[in-house]
Image 1 (spheres, helix red, strand yellow):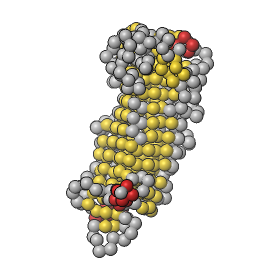
Image 2 (tube, one colour):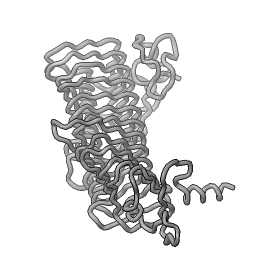
Image 3 (cartoon, helix red, strand yellow):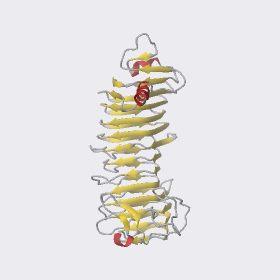
Image 4 (spheres, helix red, strand yellow):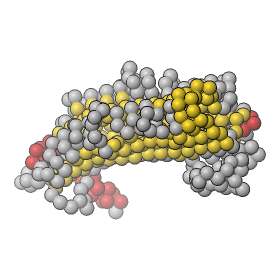
Length: 403
């Protein structure tokens, strides 16, 4: 029964979808006028609002979506391969929903044209120079999209200053091993405010930022910036404020976050950074107002340095934070107010964390750690792992509760 069900899914990717449909399979359609042997042929015959159902196969083409409201549904990236030596793998020139494809061979995997609202789900892109290029999109949403091994950058969103946009959202997925050639950033470049949730980043490389370079506000929720093999730039650069919640980052002697605040602010909570080399700040913030609470910044080796460096104007609160292997917060260049409460500033041995190892650090406190029950109630009801806070008489200092 399982094999029958899997076969049905592979060859019926539009099961349960209402409305007009056209079908694509590598075999000729014969007398069935709704079945085509290429994706582009189906798209050329599609009326607005049509669903294109792409069955299992290897498609040597570069399809373009230029009719409004098309749904292009593939049987899944393990079953549908679009391969081309053209400049672009899939072109999206009108509002569309695209899912279930693996795209290879093109210099740019997916191109989204100006003014378009596009949703991209369950895609696998690898190789080429750019994974996805969106120029002036009205809205762009990515869900379960994996982009790897691009030579320049995984995702590029460009916009002019006067353009109106609904924003960019990324939910789950992974960006891995991007930026082998000279590039400002290996992972994501965005001129538009961007929200990233539940996404993995690893081994991306860039001259200005490794993983994210945001010219507007950057929001990270439940994001993992995994252990890099090498890095000479910050993991995340945000030019107009940062929100980082339930996020874990690993670095090698570079900042995790380099933030400037123009019209937006700084909100960091339940965030943990482990620097295997040490000697630099985990967070650098300029002209920022906001708070950093229940976060752990741990330098696992090297001479102690400030965990946080503040400069410019701003009014910032630090509460219930663990600054481990650190000299604390450096605010001599801050022209504003700094409020500190319930901070731990001390060595690794004094912090008594569970397993602060460079390869796979576990920054949770041991039972005898001074972090345990050392904080005050701030309304942060869970720790970075999703466990209820507090677990004892009072909240623990840092991103982790003792369990």
